[in-house]
Image 1 (tube, helix red, strand yellow):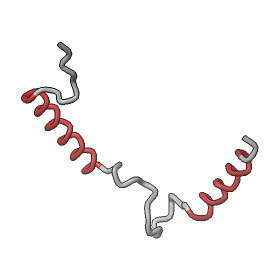
Image 2 (cartoon, helix red, strand yellow; image 1 turned 90 degrees about the vertical axis):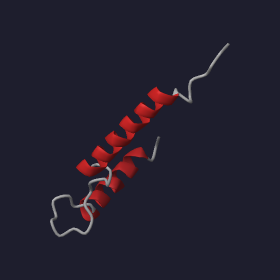
Image 3 (cartoon, helix red, strand yellow; image 1 turned 60 degrees about the horizontal axis):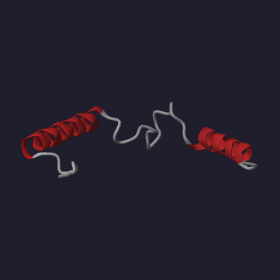
Length: 66
């Protein structure tokens, strides 16, 4: 790809100017909203509930081939 190096350079310039990770006064953090502990705990709880339901009711994605 011919534009790859140029795009990488432009992306690097953008990140240096606008995405300052260590700035405590920055309005937005670079951390994704699903990376926090609460989101991870909620996801785990939902997965465990789904697994329990599949154990009790059967897997709806499994084919019954007769």
